[in-house]
Amino acid sequence: MITAENITYSIGSHRILANICATFNPGRVTAILGPNGAGKSTFLKCLTGALKPDEGSVTVDGRDLHQYSLTELSRRRAVLSQANPISFPFTAHEIVVMGRNPYSLEKTTASNAEIADEALALVDAWHLRDRAFPTLSGGEQQRVQFARVISQIWEQEGASLFLDEPTSALDLKHQHQLLELVQILSTEKNLTVVIVMHDLNLAYYSTDHCYFIKDGGIQGGEDSKDLIKADIISEIFDLPKEYAAMRFGGQFAD
Amino acid sequence: MSLLERTVPMPSFLKQVRIPALLLLGLLLLGVAAVATSIGAVSIPLTGIIGADLTDQQMAVLSSIRLPRVLLAIIVGSALAVSGAAMQGLFRNPLADPGLIGIATSAALAVAIVIVLAGPITGYFGLYAMSIAAFVGALVACFVIFRFAKLTGTFSVTYMLLTGIAINAMSAAGVGFLTFLSDDQQLRTLTFWTMGSLGGALWVSVIVVTTIIVPSGLILIRNARELNVLLLGENEAQYLGVDVERLKRTIVICTALSVGAAISVSGIIGFIGLVVPHLVRLTLGPDHRLLIPASAFLGAIMLLLADTVARTIVVPAEMPVGILTSMIGGPFFLWLLIKQYSGRFGL
Picture 1 (spheres, rainbow over the protein chains, first blue to last red):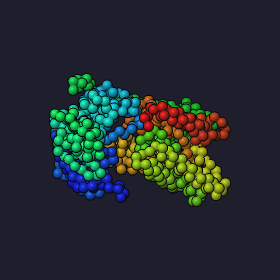
Picture 2 (tube, chains in turn brown, yellow; picture 1 turned 90 degrees about the vertical axis):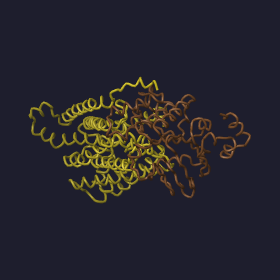
Picture 3 (cartoon, one colour; picture 1 turned 90 degrees about the horizontal axis):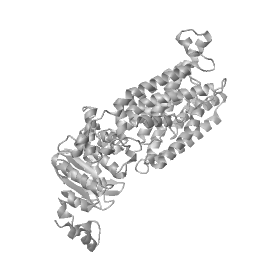
Picture 4 (cartoon, each protein chain N blue to C red; picture 1 turned 45 degrees about the horizontal axis):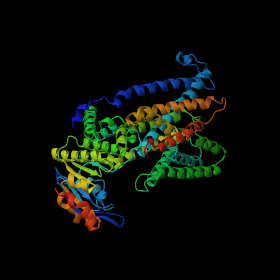
């Protein structure tokens, strides 16, 4: 379980996050939604330990995030960031094997390579195995990076998985596959999954809970199906009521 | 999930290729070294060396001129290539070369300051002092480049190269000013530094640079796996358990030490650090566990070849080897630019 307590984060005099509290449970997929520039990625970085909040704390399974060593953390949580270009011709398989870095000293190279292969197969990218990563399309790169991230916590129970817009470059089929896989992993391996996303439709159908971040504040935390509704969406995203009703009204009836 | 059946564990490319490739490069280096030892203003036949059948003059040339020079070319060449490979990993870009981004010129400026202000210094102490000066110069340049390349928030290649241009210009101005101040003897030494030459090879310089370059290179090889992970991005590497700040510090210090040591004995020899790692990547792939040691061998081979050509092509005179490497390296860099912009590297 991951708990954020009163997180405040500023850059200069600009306050990006203010007194944010949130809880993320194992075995559940939670979406973080909100307008551009609302502070979603910054919040995610605070949760993963890439940024240290000015005030407040993040606890992972009851222990402060910054009390974990880098190696301990690397086995407890994996993070898929937004696209990060790689200018060297590593093969897709080599990229995924890097996900096994936390285990490079105790597991054999062969077993790490095997896990990387299985992860590639899971994201429907096994055929890209020996292709140079920089030559892959945006969506293919995203799937390979996702394979790297799940191989990092491959044998862990109850670890956490953070995804920052994991489906932004994916076609419909692979969006569906990836999120289905996330749901399966979260249930079977009791993962705490946190996804920053923009597609409310996808969030509605494939996440358990959701939070909204707007102007550095947070709200929500209940079931996605109760929260992703025309009136709430129109308020969060400053949409005209009629437009929100048209987009997120009737079609979401169960 | 039925796709899982297709996964057949394959032997790793690295494991298969590493030993044979390094052995081959090692043998090649031995061959080139043998030829380089043998030819020159005074020819020293290999059969004579093996059979210990040399004239006194040949013996003298071999032991006090030829051998130190060949060894210095090997060690300096490998230092430049290894630093290039490590810098490119650190800056996550194949265009980072200690010469291009101003690290070498900044080191040369530091050396020039020592030469002009402290007067002629020789021997072990002097060489170590110059190496340390060059190291400090290289370190300052690395620091400045890092700060400026990150001005935009994320690391910018454009800013890295532009900062390099600025540092190169400022260092050139500094060296120019020192040239203006210096006497004839100092002038000669300075010119030699800015052109790059192995002509001053002595056993002292071989010993001094080897004691600096070999440990730095070994430390870089030890960090090769983490350097691979760093290419995913700094945050990503941290998520994967890499202590990014420590790793960056280690790489900067080791490369600055190697480049500094190399420059203090040979001046600025450009493009080895750019061309060699690139050729290795093209043939053996980008994995630093193979890239760094293979670059060490290939860098040694290339500089030894270039230096042998430089000292035999216009006998009895001698061309500074830096001119030769830049003549080959410049067009190569342009070719690399064209290739990058045709989208191969996804910049």
